[in-house]
Length: 468
Figure 1 (cartoon, rainbow, N blue to C red):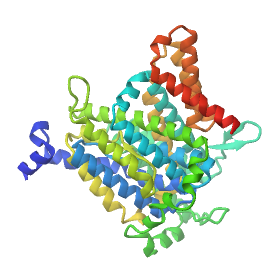
Figure 2 (cartoon, helix red, strand yellow):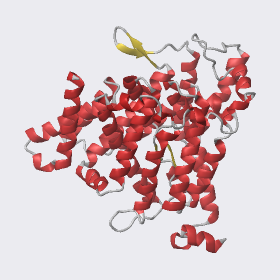
Figure 3 (cartoon, helix red, strand yellow):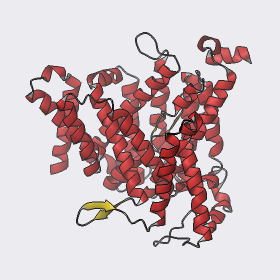
Figure 4 (cartoon, rainbow, N blue to C red):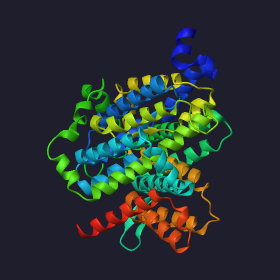
């Protein structure tokens, strides 16, 4: 066994131990399990089958994570990216009106991302965009994720007078979300490391237990006003558990390979807005995955003297592979997760930790009813708000606020992403204004040519959007 592990995962070279790898993979899986029902709940708002989405997300997460572990040999776990899924469900779908077309657009973005990742273009693009802009883009994504969570939970509702306003605290769903958020931030700031790492799944579990008790003890309605069942009610739970079609990985056929049916391609390619969506998705995925891979690699001690991953091209290739296969299989793009740092903190240094997590993801695909109650918006919203907050705070703190141009770029970008409810529009205007401010302040030499190209592409996007 020792020789096998050493040959496959380079145990001796990386000074890894079997117990640390297995425990790291297990705890990382537990920290990320909330993604499966959360992704199903978010993409389900496009009209997709929830159980099929759950299975697709689990299968894709398993496959890509296994590729990362066995081929890349990194303790990096991948699953559906929080933020990209919300962007797909609430922005792209709103523009295209079809979940098949929305997934096809994501497929195009995934192919483009893979081409860039496997060529020198990735390094060129990463190097051309200043670190401060990268932080701003990621912070804007975090703010958008959190805003989607606040909206879905009922914290934020529409208002004819002020556009948005605070929701009613008489709404039991809002109160449940509030409980979940309080639990998450409580667990995040305790001294116990394990509790910190499992803050989101622990908060979701406690909230669901409380919700089931409240809903059934106090006889709250089993359905919403539109007739859709509320997952916390015993009737809904019983119906889901007793339905043989919900077990054993069934439902996958309802979402997989649907992007190749009907006039989906025409819907996407004939809409000028599609190209801005694709470009935005590529940019967001590019910075998100690069930052995570480098952060986890640094923590695992597998960064060379030049600050590059040892064998990092394999990790990038595994990540690119995931970007391509997700949409055809019926789910949003997977990305490397920061939660992979948990495995590293527990001593994991090889791909075995990823293999353990990947196998557990695959097993979870067959037990959707167990996770059904976690697809309620009141539960998924707490995950979106907390993850969004972490991404926002973690990136915005590194922005150089001493540079007024950077400060104004951050202000315009983040605020407009929220006010336009569009990452593409907010990011585009922010980058255009950044280039203008640099030109006017006679700092044009600090802006690299690819940055001008990116800003120019967004100018064309806004012109097409206005006149076509």
